[in-house]
Length: 297
Length: 343
Image 1 (cartoon, rainbow over the protein chains, first blue to last red):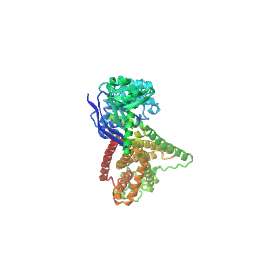
Image 2: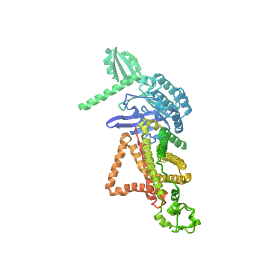
Image 3: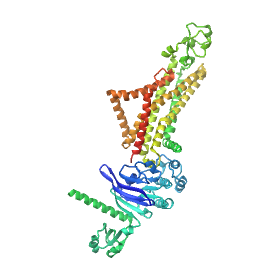
Image 4: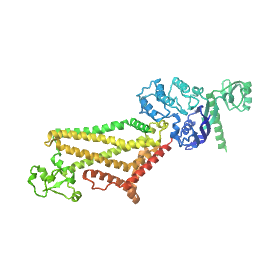
């Protein structure tokens, strides 16, 4: 499969703060990627950079185009929802459909209407009169009706209740996705999307701290729940992260086999959310120790 | 391609429905309402004095075709009114039949056109109305134009619009055409129709009160309407001439969009600086100063030439071409600035 996104040495600074720190990755066509990070980690900035909506240093190629220079051409191949984006308040649902049908070649108005008919949004209702959930539903219906090579969703279900969130991810997979689509999604509700992801990228302080193909998750990461008597042995194997538990400790290992670790305690594959917390905290400890070293020096 | 342009206009209409629909209606209602109330007030208080009578009819004829008596009053003209004899002039259609009448030298006539005081009074009023209309139209061009460049950022829908594959050229050209052509025409039409309403009201009142009847007022009616319409060319000239300034304001707004309301202060401040500098620098006086002076003078000349004939200096086409060239360049910069605008 060909690369649909190619990011090389991308950096971005807001005044003195580095919001993107030497980002490198490629995305193949057909992947469904979860971009996970804490607030202010750089997720939105990275997505905006991919679409040429923010300035950056480095090289990015999306759908074979330079987003900084060919932003309009790129938008013909991409569908996008930004976390802070809201639909224009003065527009009605019908006007919005009419506008996009004329402006976006890949927009299927009938499909959009069928999505909207399953909601309770009246056609003549203005966005300013809609609830936050209705606006999100409308926006999602539109984006799902655009035949695009790449779908970028930044916190798409913000404001939706759990039933609608689940329904959205289900229809995303069943009605939208096929092997020619690539989806990048950011969310804080990791557990709700992990079943649809093929790959996950953890971002923290503008740096990608982990890039995990979910097919290899089981082989790559092992979680061991062990009592304190094995602490020194497990410490010798250099765990990525250690969590204090009521009944002993939990150790996270990367590139160790479950067979090797089974002798020390209960082994399992870590959940993505646990893995994210562990890797984030581990990364922050590294940063803190780096700062301390610099200060001492 | 064309459909996209049409849709872009539709989108602007939806967004600025208030400006497109309610402001023209408000202007129309204001002019007509105020005029009706004033007429009723003066009518009821018996202060309504009509200036429109047969003197005006003769006075409003084109000065190029006026004929004058040779000093003697021929018997053939006894049938004419006292007013005609007093002012010693006749409408152009009559004198052909009377050899005793002599025609004034065209050149002399042009140097010092004899204009009836009533006509002059009406003409001045038309010119004043047009100055007010000009000012109003300029306000309604500048504010919506700057506003349309910033509105999507203000209502936070900018990322939605940017996710649409619409070229910046298309967006900017739509906004310029809309603000500088379609919208002023719409407003002008509203004003024009309102003035028509005013004249209909005054015709009705005059017809019922005056002995001269509606025939007298129809001359004035025609003159006012033809002249106001013809004067729109002066406004159109002004729009093209000052388009670079408007576009420059737009460019400043887009480049410094993050400053929000401070942009208006900035534009105002830069205007103040330019005005101050104009009084200090010879170079600025002969360039920027001349540009503003020439623009205003030519617009005024175009206006006067509608009423009093082409005695005034016409358009300076060299400077006019510079204005068009500057507009094209600044539009290009505006498109580029929008493209470079990041979030």
